[in-house]
Structures are given as C-alpha cells and as structure tokens.
Image (cartoon, rainbow, N blue to C red; front, top):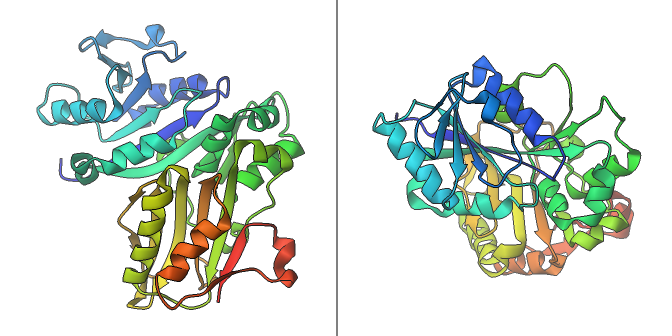
Length: 340
C-alpha cells in the first residue's frame, strides 16, 4: 500500500461514552477496513463482538475490523500492525483508530506517533476526536486536568448523552474556553461513524477564531488558548526558527498549535500549520484562504505557559514585533495577541 494510512485518536474522560461509540464504529460496514487499538486495561466489552482471535493480541471483528489490545508501547503496536498487514499476516486495513484510556492526556500519544521516523512516512494524522458527557461534563472539566487536555487538543468534540440532558451552558462555556475551533456534534444522532471518526475537520475559520475567555474553573487545569494574528507576512525560515525554538524549550507544555499562514516567500499558497508538543508537522498547502479572512493566524493550546513565552520566541525570529492587543480589543477575551 503506497498511500499513507490515516490515524484518528479517540479520547474522552471516564464515562463519556467511548465504549458505545466504538461498538457502533466496529459494527458499521463503512468501517470494515479499520484497525482499532485500545488499552488492554480499558473498560470496553468486546466478547460479544469477537469472531476469531488472529493471535493473542489481534482480534477480528464481525465487520472485518481488527482490534489490537495494546500490551506494548504505542509505536511498537502500530509498527507491528502495519508490518503484519503489509506481509499479509492479518486482514488488510486502510485506517487506524487509537482509543486512549479515560484518564490519558492524548498529546503525548500524538507526539510519540509524529516523532517516529518510520511512522511519519506511512501514517497520516487525521484528527483527535474527544467525547464529552452532556450530563457530567462541566463538573468533569472543572475537576480533572486530563479531561480539560482532551478537550483542548480536539479537532472534533462529540457531546454525548444529549438524549438524557441538554448541554449545560456552563459546559458549553467551559468548552469555548478550552477550544474555540473544534467541530461540535451532539450524540446520539444520525451520523455516519466514518464521518465522525475520519471526516474532514475544519481549519481555523474566522467565525470562531477569536479566543474565548477561560472560565475560572479551567484555571485549575492550567490550560489556556492563545490566538495570534499577523499583520504582516514572515518567511518560512523566520516562522520555522520561532516555532522550532518554542517547541524545543516549551514542548511539554505546548499541547497543540494550529494555524493558517501566508508566507512572504510563498505568497501563492496558504500553509495549514499543525504542531504537537516538540513535533512540528510538515504543512498542508491550500490554493486559497478557506474563508473571507486573509490574515495569517495561529492558535496555541498551552499548559501553564505565559503569553510572553510565545511572543519572545517570535520577536527573536526576525523583524516582527509581537504585542498584546490594545484596550479597544480587550472585549475579545484574554490571550488574543496581534503581531504589528
């Protein structure tokens, strides 16, 4: 197989509904070419789904999906699955879902996958899909930093159990404070499992770009979202130096970076920027802006990091002065910065 294998990371706090969603995913004919990696200690009940144990680690589902019970580190597990697929030892698959435990921060998993040279050539990172419980989600986000991290790095947020309760305004406010760009979908609903897990996620659009004020309860997690708008383009080298230095020095706290950039030395195309902790992915390129906003902009999801840690690195990269927003823009909420 020459095409890269897309990977989605599925996460969500304990009780958010990952088990129910995965059962639906595994039973869907449209997901028959999927490999699912779950934690061995996870709470997912698989016995009724099993048809044949290929070996002690890989299980074959009725739909044709493969399920791998992770007993080794994530890189070893993914490498093994791909190598065995390519040798014809297990059923062929064309995409992978990695389900984290309910207490896991997904950022290290993203970093680990991206940092491995072999996997970087054969995998294509698609999305982080995070489940949030509509009933208990607000309290969970306020009390558990892991849950806040799961929301903060998400590309798509699935709000579950909306048949039991409408999402509380406090929950929606908390999600806004942690992640203003992700898709949001209510479950249950008539949604294609393949679209939920692997459907196209939005780039950073103008309509939701401005960072929201972080509710007081979220400060316990020490996670904030910082937005930058560039008034003037910079070169790819200046950008690489700035973001590279930031990732090198603060990688553990740099949970995620997303952005849209028009570089001074590549004005004909728009770069989609994506970074996780110490790892900066190769950009995807667009032929034009995805919305009416033609400014280069970045969103940083950080843990316990002052805005100055970001502005210092970018100011040192070249003739670009990064300054806080002025008083007239303060209504947009803390954390939004404008490059002058």
